[in-house]
Image (cartoon, rainbow, N blue to C red; front, side):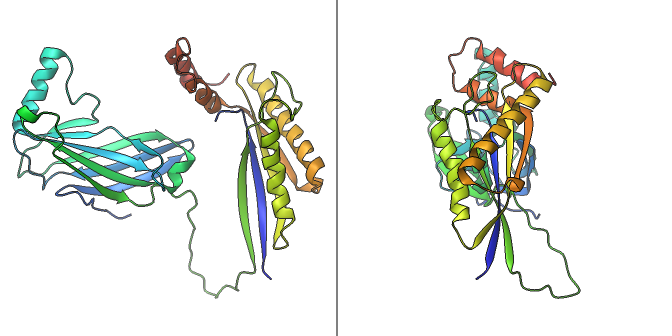
Length: 317
C-alpha cells in the first residue's frame, strides 16, 4: 500500500479575516491576458482589441471584466470599458458638462469608436487576493444600449470566457531528464487550516470557553487526529504561525504573536499527543489585513473611511 506523507500547517490569526486568447464576444478580442499573484494582491493585465467592432452613432458598448468563482457563488466585477458611437459620445460629454455627472462615471476608460480603424485598450487592475479566486474564471460581459429614446434599455448582453482558470496557486515545474525517473512511491502533501482564536486583550492564555474558541480548537485537533488515524498517511510536521492585533509596539506584538502560537501548539500537542519534534512555531507580528477586514464588518463605524485610510497608509510601527 502506498504511503502519503502529509505536512499540516495552521494559521493562527485574529477573528477577521502564454499565449494570446480571444474572447467569444462578437467582434471583441481579448489579447495577452496575464494574471499574477504578488503577496496579498493579484495583478490583472490584458488588451481589448476593438478593431472589428462596429457601433451605430447612438450606441454605447460596455465591457465588464468579471472574476467568477468556480461554483458561481461569488464574483468580482471590475470597472468597465465604455465604447461610444459618435452621437452617444457627444451625449455623454454634454451630460457631464451640464449636470456634472454622466452614465460613463466609474468607467475604467471611455473610448469613442471610429468604425473601420484599429483601436486597442490596455487594461490593468490590482485586486485584493481572496482564496476563492484560485478556482475562479475571468469572463468579459458585454452590454449594449441604443438610441436616445430608449437610453438605459438593455438591448443585448453577452458573456465570453477569457481565462478558464483565473489563478494557479501551485504551478508544477517541469524539466527534461536524461534518465527515466523511478516510479514515485511516496507522495508529499500540505494541508493548511486557519484557526481564528479569540484572546483577551494582552493575553496569551487559550480559553476554550471564550467566544467561538471551542469550535476553532476542535477544527485544529480534529484535522490532526484524522491524519493520525489513517494508516496511509504520516505526519512529518505541524507548522503554526501566530498573529496579533496592531496596537502596541511592533516588537511587543511580534513576541505576543509568537507566545499565542506557542500556546496553541501546547494545547493541541496535549490533546493529540503528537511528537514534540514535529511542531514548528513562529510569530508573524501584526495583522493589518485582518484588522482592515474587521473594520469593514462595521460600515456604520464613526469615520470609517479615515480609519481604513490610516490602516492602508501605515508603514512600520
